[in-house]
Image 1 (cartoon, rainbow, N blue to C red):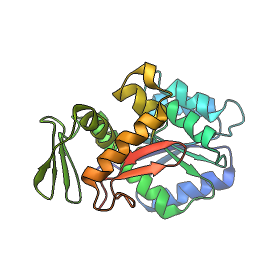
Image 2 (tube, helix red, strand yellow):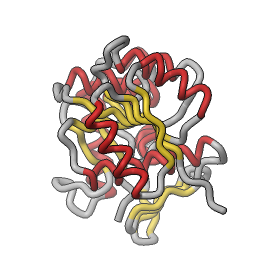
Image 3 (tube, rainbow, N blue to C red):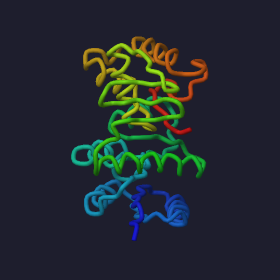
Length: 231
């Protein structure tokens, strides 16, 4: 029998907890709930959920700290749900290890889509990452460092490929400017956001049908970029 994916919701609003439990259980998820950060951390350790949905405004410790403490020992995907909609709050949460960020009020359809992406990441944590990432007519062979569009190889520079590969291997996740610059270029480049924009523009020109309206290399203005593999 197939095991239901397990989702832990950490939020101090009773109505949100009730609503999410009802909705997620109807979608055949196993759901645990916690009303404080400390309780959530304890449940995360004891129950080892597949995905955590985390509010930032908790009564005991801030959700960003919860995320940072989780990342000391776990790579479980974390989706932040918060009323905080400023760029600095999103960047801080993502830099501390959150995988995604949704602002309240949110659409249920969008949340379920983000959960599906997070579950793919969770599955990868228990196995080997896919060596080939596909999205529409785009194919990225991470092992062979080859990119094909409509079956034809696209020539990329080493840095362009490294940037694309990091985005693609984290498909669906919002990666902050700082995170991308540090992983692809090194810690001394973390303030060179314009440098990153130039390379993203180059990748879009080579890979997107319409670089002005990208399908795969998406922006979260002021925060970062993500690779969308959804058709």
